[in-house]
Length: 492
Ligand SMILES: Cc1cc2nc3c(=O)[nH]c(=O)nc-3n(C[C@H](O)[C@H](O)[C@H](O)COP(=O)(O)OP(=O)(O)OC[C@H]3O[C@@H](n4cnc5c(N)ncnc54)[C@H](O)[C@@H]3O)c2cc1C
Image (cartoon, rainbow, N blue to C red; front, side, top):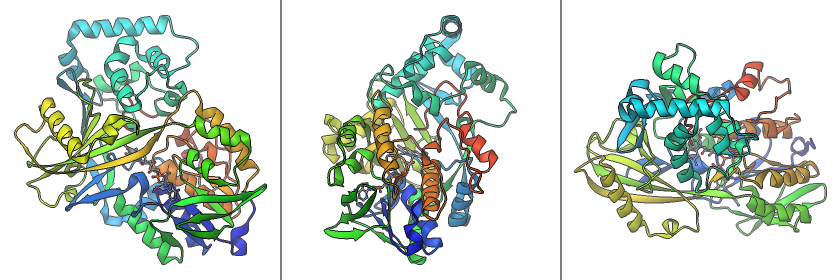
């Protein structure tokens, strides 16, 4: 990699989310000049913590779980005693009842009844005997592994709420990345025998969480970057990225031009393509329209109630309400609320910016969320005393029929523009959690310092072949390991 940083040229990082701040921290630790330009007034990106009248909540509850020791070590280093270990309880609300999650055989049977359970087994056997080939879409992938009946009950409605499109339109690559290795037998084994094998990702019963939410981590990392001599500039949206054949030369943000030795971009790929100046080659400009996103609304409800329900979060499969998931933030950390007499729930709605839901006023959304809570019978009698709404555009990069073509075009351009690296979740249109978003930032920074990592292999099915201290063999294996072993992957 062109090593401008060693010559003192500044690295510009677009976005102060986990990927951008991790990259900046790594660069600042080696005294490489870097400036983070963030459009928002706070750091953390989708992993920020919102504060409202003393209550704290996440954009979707953010579990801290990773198999990457380099990331785990960083979390521990930054958070110290504020890195809490919290018990996990999450259930599925379906058909007027609660199903334990991870699934437990007795609990499932109690709700479904033996006849329905027998139908599920028959449907599973049929799927195994007559699998759908080829497995083009998510529906095929799940039906082949669980049968149509379980797919309909535990997968279809929630997944379609999340993505807003039919499971037939979602590429099977999504399943391959997020729920690969899953089988009905392993789910049943875990449910019935409480398997003594090491817990798979979704079966863990506790997780780490910062005392004041994920924003606590990112505020501290930003302070560390500044302490090391780097800059983090808020309210500085990047509106242009200047390039010439062979490399980027600078960016415009807040009416100012910043010359660049390197640029690391965590902004959504579609937006990045559209602000390249001059306009990029036709093949790349046309690729911008191949990337699609799902947007996300958090309606925080403050209730005068001490113990609303014991879960950290509840998945709502019931199609009669729009809410997809409900977080109870005081169960994530007791210090997310200023007084134990109150509860702060995060009612989560998956939608598109064009939907009427998105453009409802905050008051209307708070009213809707309160009504839906009542309809579900949760927190009966509790009074909603306050509320807040946060709209998060492009919360989810969508894996549809076109995004792979888009990525090919982007990678072609990046190969010819070596001082521009795309990192993170929307930056790579890759469905990364914090840990993998951070890892791409870390490796990109090391590339600037002289290494040669292929960031596109992080959190992918391809083997990561670099032999380097950053990724040990075990960590490499972790990148390739299966994730949950239950019929529904719902940590999105
Ligand atoms: C509902 C939900 C739940 C999640 N739960 C978990 C979880 O439990 N555990 C977990 O580890 N991860 C979770 N994640 C994933 C996690 O949020 C992401 O992996 C992580 O935030 C991605 O980091 P990033 O830096 O790549 O991008 P982002 O967090 O999106 O940050 C990008 C930053 O770039 C800024 N930006 C964009 N455009 C510009 C511009 N033009 N100029 C300047 N700045 C710009 C944005 O304002 C933002 O601050 C969840 C995500 C969602 C949506």
